[in-house]
Image (cartoon, rainbow over the protein chains, first blue to last red):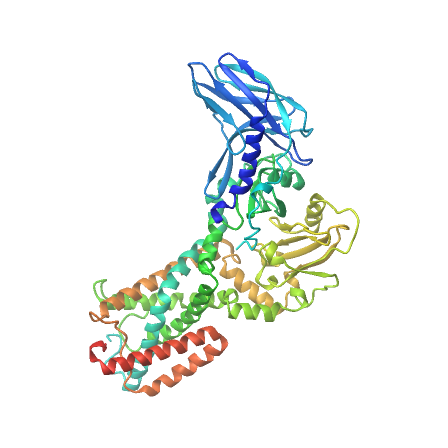
Length: 168
Length: 448
């Protein structure tokens, strides 16, 4: 059971991510790139950072790369990756950005690649739109709105036994 | 029996054989434990260094000039990444450390690491699953279950017996070497005998010290002594004024407590109204002067409290403060100075056992002691192998005069009463030895 300790909350996030993905969102075309379903999660009152997600498709014949992002609502936006190694979850910045292969697509989603909106003076509230600019190595800058969606609910669907509270 | 001079009187020879026999038995049983205890112990002495290196991605951050974010913001960030209930906030011990936030999820407790400067979650893993927590449970054998811990308690008792009998065997009896020097070459048994004896002479003190100071953690003796010594006054030292309602929850369940505070219970808030925030509580703990790196147990119920606790290398800075979650006033505030003389000595012993008392020197001396203990075990195994007749256990021969066992048994009896589990194991070994002797008489092929 140990190996599943972390999986549940992560699954909860993933699950909501899938739900969110199924909702329609405005897609933006820029050259060969199609950006769709951009959203950020609403922030709890005290939270300093928020995750952002979007799907980027590259219909061209040239590889491209997401190298930076920014938003007037945040002091900084970083490109991050979440990885799971056994029970250990790690989040790290991708300093070289994120490749978008020719003819392929990359999905920024909970539990994987994502954007981190940092230094957010006014927390994102559900129903708002957060203007965000993504910077690509070749395609240049693309502005698109990120919808603010509800925070993930408690992963009630995955309640197992409330076991192993001893922490040994 | 090259170590015994030919001129030795018969009685000395008899006693020598008896002591040697028990040294052999004790060694045979304890040898594997000595090796695992030494290796895990030597690692654990450097736990902060190793954990900070092995888990650097989670535990270390770039030092920044900017102010740290408020604790509530960091907790919110952690809960955003790992949904659940925050149960503990651990203050970064130094400017390059991350904040550890313990989150209770439906799959157990998770340790979530947050960069205090920007609020980014660095990662998460099950609580107490760092490499050094694993090493700690391997050291105590808790890793393998409750019962296996008793083996460690027996091993500790037997290791003291080993030192006592070993020193007796080492005691110079007119031989030309092997006192503080090593004779012969590695091909010869005397080389290994001397290496073992001389190493043992120097490391014997440390073995006894580590065995004795390790005993408070043991399953039977340590558990009973802890209950007896700390079971009063809700688990606080006698001098500490406890005049607030106490909950049934123990501090140790929230944040690992010092040995003397394992029975300490968490008090209940007496106030009403609007609770103070974690930020207020942390500000109060800072104002009260808790050593950096303190853990804050968060209130989980209306009568819960903010429990600040810290057990730094500097013993005198051990501190536990419980704050009323409404008024923010300390309900109970105690430090090392509140322990009685016995408690102070005991905590000093434990602190030194863990390599914390004398800084790096403490760590290096213990590392050297651990290396020497491994050398003792290896040289013991080699000298036994070289002496061992083929196809036999190679138990040292029985003394011709059995009366010499009386003194030995008397010593074992005293030790056995103080440490019952060790005493019980000695009785079992004595019975096995007698059975072995009988078997050998009936079947001479087994004789050594």
